[in-house]
Image 1 (tube, helix red, strand yellow):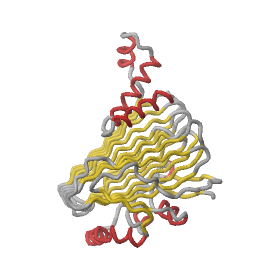
Image 2: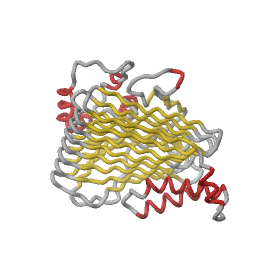
Image 3: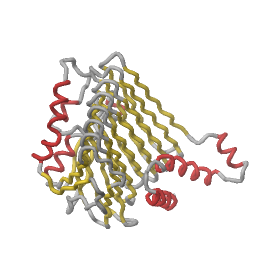
Image 4: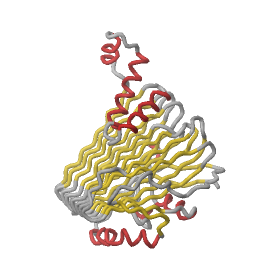
Length: 387
């Protein structure tokens, strides 16, 4: 099949010449054979896993949250160039948008449901590992459903054979009910011959918490999206993303914190490195909806440019429909400072070694948050191999 779709729409359009309003996936001759998420390595006590749930089941899971979202909508118009209507048909709004839903439906991708029962605090992570061979093309769809006052951690790892080529598309949707906590960790270490997208959409109810950690280290072309709706009062969204792009790799991402409830909190941290002729586009939006009084949002990107030939596009946005909010954003984008290089060289570390040291330090600052030492070691080994 040929794949052509518009994704990663910026919530409010900006000037076209910036080429940041959206992105296009245009890939030809993909033979998507697998549409099933691999079974978890082990299912911890307190977790229920169901495979191949229906769209009706999906709608039922999110029905209560969707009704609450509808009840909070106002007649206040959105910002100029509002793109929200493009994704109105989604059961859960995701970072990449409705085109991913359409692809999953067209390919009849099986949806895996991972659920924790009310009050269940699951300390052992659920592991899902995609391992792809040369020529493989696959899709995977998951829902993580944390019922009231429960807690769950899901770790997903994407790997492939060295020098392999292929395609992997993932969509993960999260629902954290009142007082629930979801930790979602994704580590992408596909070979450079892969095309990859990873789409996330979350809903947090009252006092719920979602924390996402995303390591994007491989694949020649990558698209990523993460949209979290802070629906309930005092709900929280934390995100930490690390990315490393080299050669002619590209990474296009769209992160949105939709803050609807009162006293919600969002923190989005991004740390990345661009080398050679890599291209990266970042869209990060804090959207304070009417009724989100007392909410706080912060997004920070720190990008290290290690080549004059890289292309970096950074688009931090704050949309505000409420007066009593605190929104902050910042971007630190630049090269390795002469003072740092001088310090390193004065201790016998040449410029090339200093760059590798800084790359590893930046990536490991995110990787160290993963609650699995074996995965951290694999990340370290992967970075050493590609550098």
